[in-house]
Image 1 (cartoon, rainbow, N blue to C red):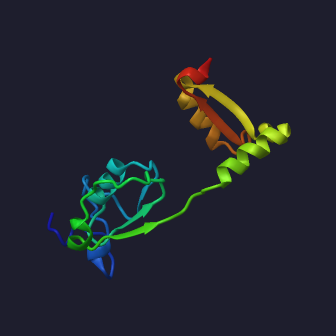
Image 2 (cartoon, one colour):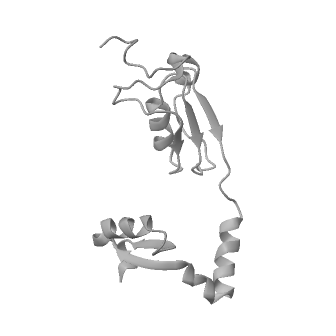
Length: 138
């Protein structure tokens, strides 16, 4: 297959994800873990002309990532603030108003994660589904 044939039909084919490219993810790529290694993986995996959205909250300390590919591959990186103080406020609200805990409709042990995801997909039967991991399973 030629390079030309490997791209999706698009007026600007150089910005489209290759149809047969297992080592490049389609755009946009979203980093949500908040780890420098995860951000580097997104930068490495995003194809030429692609976009990376930084959702994860990286540490305040300096992190080491390679930025040379931003210009070489014409990548666009956007930052997005998920929350800053909202989490503290949410925890306070849950503590003050016990009825809000009813938002969690189901909880599953880690061993039943597949069933948990199946339940979460059914919005008629669930609202928030929790998978209990590690010491929290007790």
